[in-house]
Length: 485
Image (tube, rainbow, N blue to C red; front, side, top):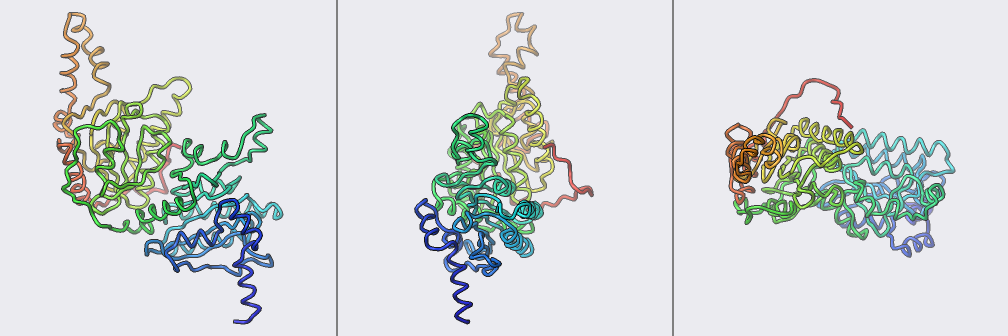
């Protein structure tokens, strides 16, 4: 290799130079190549497009491939030391190229985002650059998993691309994602808002724009590696098998106040990755393993508003079910919901639309679907939450499960109004109604396949999933359905 060529390589690998790298470190952030070194297995990262910087001193994005947990992964990392990670034609060319390679070879794509936005010097070409990245993100969605790490500012168009990916992970100390900067918003609203106020990790988590929020870059990268380990390389594969916990492990549980307790007990080694924990906490969505296989768990959380469905909970679960269906991940639904949350003129229409999204997501999903009626399943929420009528392959019920159009007291006061006027014991009427709508009655109606002991839940669900591994569905020919967004 000539001296000139080697010097040029070293210049490009240095990014924005020592001074800018020092500023990046002073801000508590790693450089793009340092981040990639942490993401990939040691020594496995191979950079692509090293010289693809034109006449510039360096490119504002670093691209390449390697292995994560010994499995192939592609990645691009925006380099804030070069033009503040600004995106223009050169960056778009490199990003789109690595995404195309990922789709062709069937490997996930990880985006490490740290960019001030579009390269303003390129004008409309910079806008076209973002449009091309967005189009490619949409094209490979559902083909290979896409994970975004927000490790610095993500402004304007830079925020839209991560929002289109499967999982968004934010390092709260440095990560920010917003459409319009705090100075402009503050001037328009006459409020003194910071970047954290607009798009810090906490705000993104509460609004559902981020799926996992941690403190540091190291934690964000570790979370990405864990999520990748639970996902397949592409939509033609299954997620990798891992060592299994004892399938016959009995759950030491009769009932539960918080869904996290049940999800933990069902999962192998009590381990799971929850997505969107701080958004609509009355619904829990988590990736875990059961019998060594990856499963997606959807659970109403009785600790939050009796697990009732609100618009946010429906949207959260619908998106998660679709994620699982994209990548051949079976869906396990743990039902314990008081029904729909109370609606009025302000949230009536959004609640209808969101519930339709959830029902549609379950109906359209072709992966194995196993549901367990663990508590109450009231009203339309029963139908929405993975019911047999909406496509569940296997449904089990705990002995104290309750399935009815409305809660027992309300039903009794309507249906037994005359008897109550005549002096009938309301408590006895409620008890009788609960028995009429209990687990045995549900099974007798063919809406549950069996009534099982809560302690056997893990064993029975794992057995059902094993039986369903060969499931195939042939859909009617169509371009795609019209999801009620």
